[in-house]
Amino acid sequence: MKTSGQFTIADLDVEKLNETTSRRLVVGKNVMLQLVSVKGGSRPPAHAHPHEQLIWITSGLMRYRLGDAEAKDCQPGSLVVIPGGVRHETWFPEDTDLIEIFSPIREDLLPKS
Image (cartoon, rainbow, N blue to C red; front, side, top):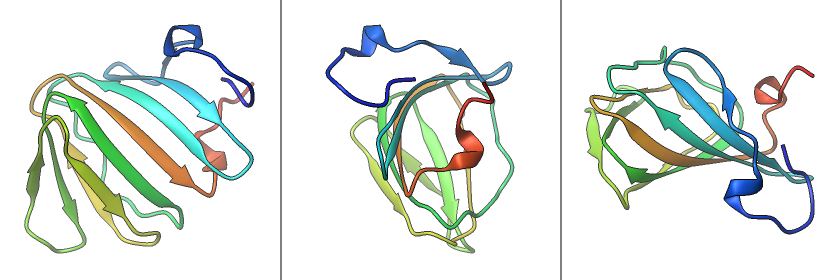
């Protein structure tokens, strides 16, 4: 995890979160960025958090739902803004890479050590 200075993506450690998801993490004072790789077939549980979240799909396909709205597809180049406190869910029909930005920092997503 990098917290200040200049570096490249290759400088960031890859952290395996579970069997389907890995990430590279950058954390500033008030914002965090995750470069996430998700295997196809993954479907994290629906959830909400007080943090504002931005998602940028760089490869693959992500389906998502905000609140009770109809599910939508996101392909490379798609951007999603999720307001804090809004219940949302995502699923990944194929291997997908994305960038997530959270503000403020999600302490629950920081590495344990």
